[in-house]
Length: 348
Image (cartoon, rainbow, N blue to C red; front, side):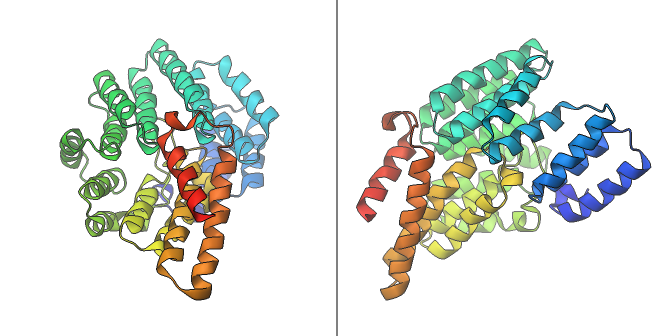
């Protein structure tokens, strides 16, 4: 309950009590590990999983967490080790999707697409069409964020065909359509989600906010996202994909569109500061660019020393992003990278 409200510290306390009462329940260790990870307490998370494994308790999501911590620590051998574990399991598709997100995080979109296809095929072979559709909808959202609107629309439509009644698929596809500027398909999905899942405080507001941005109405977007603030760090998941803090990213975009550079920078920084929630989602990569753009905006709207300081911060953030994507796919394949390089060059 506490995790779903974003209260991870309280969730850790209750999870520890539960483990003491039932020390042979793998799910209790998983809950504890997930919440310590969300708090960024990686050593503690690793110890929890070690304790579970010492009791011969196993769960594929523990290996997802171990992979994510290896990714965050830039530990390639450990990432490879976890991928090897997934290769021999019925849940192979989860490992493939993690690898897909990692490739996309570094701008290797062609490799990410291939891995997503393999994840989808693996999920369908395991008789889980909904999981396969989730991976495709997740990829559609990523394509939209990177500026490939046509690919995003196609992938989102195909995902909905595979699992038309899935909340997760409909949510990700709806947001992908909205980010790709396809309001005609995003709006009906948002309406349907609102009817079927009226208590949703994260996905639906994110779609509604993105639709407001499509209409060039940043204040309306920010208003739609107000409901997310109390629970924005919640441990929601769709097919074992973390929340990615999509709603925080869109709030940052709304502040940018509204000319509020300082507020935008704070939102994108929030994503960078919560890697244990974001994992290897594309939002973590693009948050560097968001910080750069927000500070560039501040440098244009400020004067004197404030403008100079903002420009220095913007240059540093642009450099972080360009360095992160130094061996990314060619510019034409990722429009947002081409835009970033142009902006960076103008600021130098």
